[in-house]
Image (cartoon, rainbow, N blue to C red; front, top):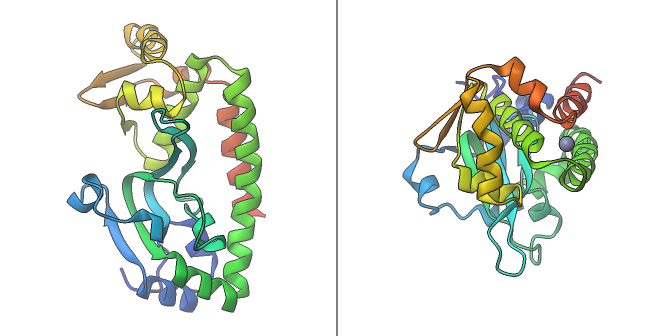
Length: 233
Ligand SMILES: [Zn+2]
């Protein structure tokens, strides 16, 4: 890949190719298969993450609880912008990544944002959709049952990986959705029995996407539409 070619990340691909090349020259490429990613040696606190295939999950632990997912970031946007806005005192939010992406230090991205209107425009476009989706998912977490939320989450993750397989355990799903492991397991059982999904060794295989969409709450379509509209306007 040359510097100027599209990357697969909507924010990076929105800016002129010359600027994209400058951004890529300071970016670190990573893959979730890298040992540095899997064993946590990358200090994500200092970076903003542009996924090109896959997703990054920002988590928060309240009162010593298991990590709850606050947001799932895919190739439509950028994770860790809070690090740019509050470089010194932003509350640290660990990232869990699955897939491939580019990491740019928050300090570098802050300088690029200061100097480039097209990058500010790209980030603002993404943030407008992000806020819409975040508000929707906040309501989803309080109003919708766990089973449709699990289906919604699996579909959103699969979309970001461009795959029908999502690497995640039921324990992680329960933690991210602030639900119990047994509730998540009960949610999955009829889908497994009905041939909609299959679970194996920390992976979820989506066998029948259409039927899984029928099981998901309407938030799945809402969130997908919000990002699609942002990309085309
Ligand atoms: Zn919902």
